[in-house]
Length: 118
Image 1 (tube, rainbow, N blue to C red):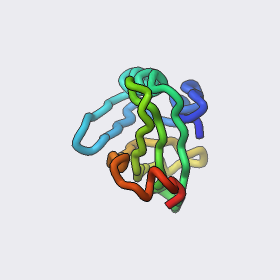
Image 2 (spheres, one colour):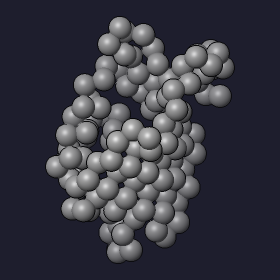
Image 3 (cartoon, helix red, strand yellow):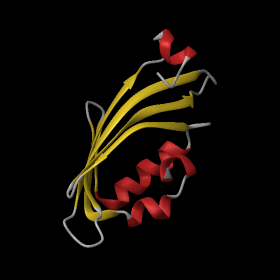
């Protein structure tokens, strides 16, 4: 929940120097400095809440699925379904080498507005 809590230091210490984040269809973030900038931009979004639905982990990969609830600049509540796929280093203290994020705006779907726990 480091994203939600704004723990930039923890996030930056959890990735490799050559970290690559592909937010599919939106943008590609390469390296720690670009990742740091992306984190700061995300923290500028008011009232972000993350509800994790599933976590799957093995020796070299991890997958996290859930919903992000945030407010846009017009203070409207927005719901985004996400799935993050992580590639980890194969070391005694694994770090994230790659992250691929799939994000879908589901705000118009009634079931998310009425029950974000879907």
